[in-house]
Image 1 (spheres, rainbow, N blue to C red):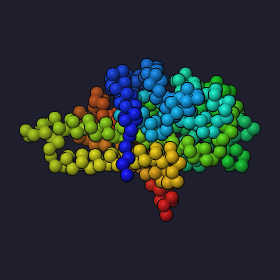
Image 2: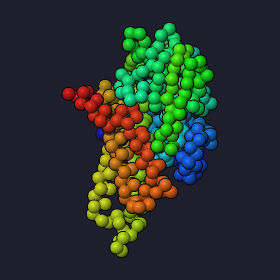
Image 3: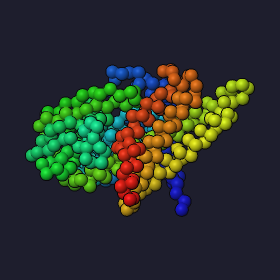
Image 4: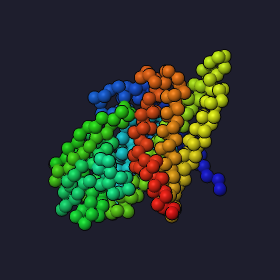
Length: 365
């Protein structure tokens, strides 16, 4: 079987990558990282992504979107990971996915065009602090259209105009609910994250009015989590590939004892192993996105494989980047820590490598 991106998908990826290189490079990323009081949501980057259709990729055409699939969306996620780009792209895309999957016609007409155009920032609150990512970690209750409880971590809650919340009713059945940013009883609290390319927070709900997504049942929650896992894994393989590429380039050019340090056997073997691991993770993400796009009966297995391999690849490649750049790789001035910290923060999201392997064992034994 031949399985690869189409010419159109590769062109889409190149467009986003070139935009980041020209308009939002690592110096711009550093500006966001060092602006610790800022919201981490640069509008120039946001508008550029919207203009390229990166926010509209999964939104149906009848709602001003591109009507594409996860295979197309994952090329955007991968490019953003490689550029360690800040901003609520994933959060907004997932909020739109919740409305697309489970919303009424009226809800879709109201929210999808605004989310696709970047006029509204979305985010998702799908579990409580420390909870599992399989739908059992929800710590928000719903009763008579009112939410109580908390969710954490939530990406970019301070700039989100629309929040998709997973909550359980009195019978313990999970569902999805829409909450607007100015809703009563809603409290957003910033949380510290060592990944300066992102802003996260916790949300408290106290008798907060919410609008149910009519199709937001347990299956919809699982579908949203699976999509989040694949797009997060795509970001991680983007981080991993870029970290490895930069490390190889540096170790090819840096000489020690009259030869490139990359010629030393210990480094060559380690870098070759990382190349294999990152390549396998890339392919696993591609297949998982394809499996979800086509409702493949083995999609849950594919998602678990992609999540575990992407987490491991990013964790190991960025760790090697810090080490193989030598002393400079440990400094604040060098960009290696952008990749390292992003990988550390994202690796556990939507399920850690260990959680994905446990899910894989459950699904196959």
